[in-house]
Amino acid sequence: MLKDRIKNLFILIIFMIIFDGFIYYKTGSLSPSTIKNNIFFIGVYLITCFIIYVISRRNG
Image (cartoon, rainbow, N blue to C red; front, side, top):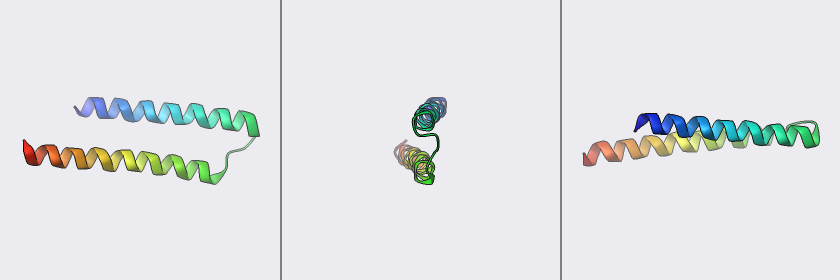
């Protein structure tokens, strides 16, 4: 199950890089809010994975 979460995290990061590259291509720059949003989404994903891990350990 950990392999799936790591794989999903890498897929999320790859899509963020592609999306940021498209924004950079269109506008010529990246705003700090875009980078903060990316960090926020990765943090939410990691916290969600941790909560699911704790709940599954408690039930299992």
